[in-house]
Length: 308
Image (cartoon, rainbow, N blue to C red):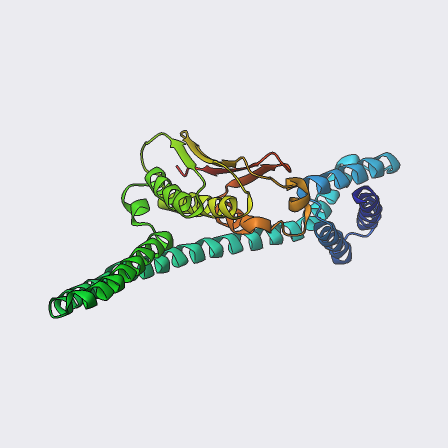
């Protein structure tokens, strides 16, 4: 399908370039821009555009009796104009990426504020309730104290759930101790809730930039939630490796797996929360690789460059 589209674009490009060389001007450059827009819409890249230009120019040079240097010089202006839609798309992508990064930072700041509020303020209220119950208990007969103790146990459960929610919103351990301890704490919580053993492996070294630690933590959090809910896994392993230039984090389970190629081929490739993982990693110029086959488990590999 793409080959037929390429042939059509090649004809359009060659025809437009030929006309421009005969009648240089704004109309010809407008045609160059239009061909570039169509190529971009067909998901062609700058390298494919360069090949279109090379093939068109090579053919026209063979046909032309004019000075080759003059033809090449004039064709350069046409080629540059055909790449304008790609430049505009790149700038738009760069602006969107910058905006997404700022949005992620604001969301994390808000999550931190809410998490601290839940942990500190709600904790203080519950402490006051426990004190009030203790005072009431002194004035009640033993039989009534038993019912009060049941209420106290429910309050303890509420307190535990609030603590868990606070840590999942923004784990203070990530800010205080770094990525690996935070992942160990996360794995312990997910493992307790799901019953799936989760191992975390990696060397404890220096701290990574906060944006990288946050992005990898959130990506692993999503991956572990997917593994515990959908993979039917009997075990999950999280590995973190880093060198001077990159940090690589993998999440592998031995669950049912899925057809990764088919899922990624779908428009958007957003299944199993992968869109959120990709977006968080993409704003840091990182990559996400998914290896999975039915019956053979799943491995998600996250690679992020470390800023100098």
